[in-house]
Image (cartoon, rainbow, N blue to C red; front, side):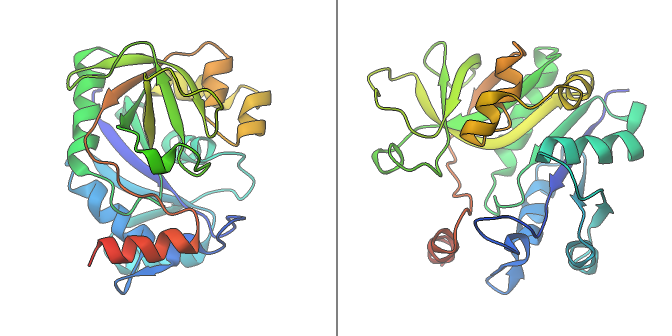
Length: 243
């Protein structure tokens, strides 16, 4: 069956910013902002996957659906898979993973990625990237993606590598990676059964599990470079951006 679901993994135990999904932005918890933006994409049902009752209660109080998960997942994708497997199964063929710390995620970019997945009959993974600005080059919180060719408006190109910091930036086929993924259901099942890889652990980037297992990730271009929140400083900056 051709249906899409957006699953937003969220937990309170983030090391750099404990309690981050419930941090208030303009009086509303961050995770609620993310859910509301994801809903505007209109690609399918939006649910939050969380091991924390506190997050689930806040999400449901604000009119959305939350599903409790185990605590001991090693990545957001593993948490997403638990919710997909137990609650959606054969009713869904594309699963989106939208990070809870992306409260300004662009609904149009989400819908664009879904269209790329459908148009190309993608049996692997899709993600998004935008132009990289100078301030982000040496910022380890800004994840970069290197692609095979220059990204254009209608591109859907293979990712060569993902990283946080690199000495040599002469290759201009490098973009700001937007932490939104669309998985074919079979490839997500394969992913969670693979062991964590060296670069996944070293770079703290779960997408390296795909790359090091030769699983293709395709990248679409988007104009929006919405700030994700990794630190309290990011939160303060985002509030200023929102006016």
